[in-house]
Image (cartoon, rainbow, N blue to C red; front, top):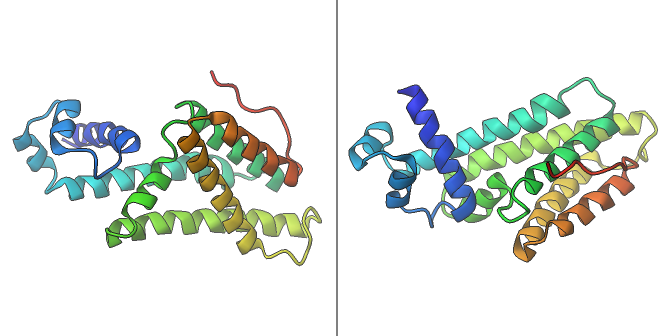
Length: 199
């Protein structure tokens, strides 16, 4: 059963990413996953229950991609920043910049109306802030950043720039918009280099 539930969650996460939570109807979920209504309610109490499972799944995925594989690795701080920005750009290039950030999309859509969803998403962003703050604190120690810089504010600004850039790119349906924003951040932190390839 666990494998089937995971398959459903993975499939529905793609639906939510492309259409949003509210716009994805139960009929679409059943059609895309190939299960009947009875099966659905055997696995999940409601669409909201499934939504919570999808958010948990997306957070685990992004935690592994950004935190475990990059930000928690024993690497120089600038290398971590470069790898993180490259990874985020690569994830957007995979969808030609048309679908946005799966977690960011849900945060915008659901934070006002779904307190539980908001709390889960907010916790992810807080952890991300802390990871980048630690990098900036290390850069301050290394003399790579002004010692009087507020690392937490700087971290929040970076995340806001990334998520805002993704939103602008999605609205314009133009991945070059996000590439320009990534390039600007790379220049600011002295971590310039070639972008990851589209392939």
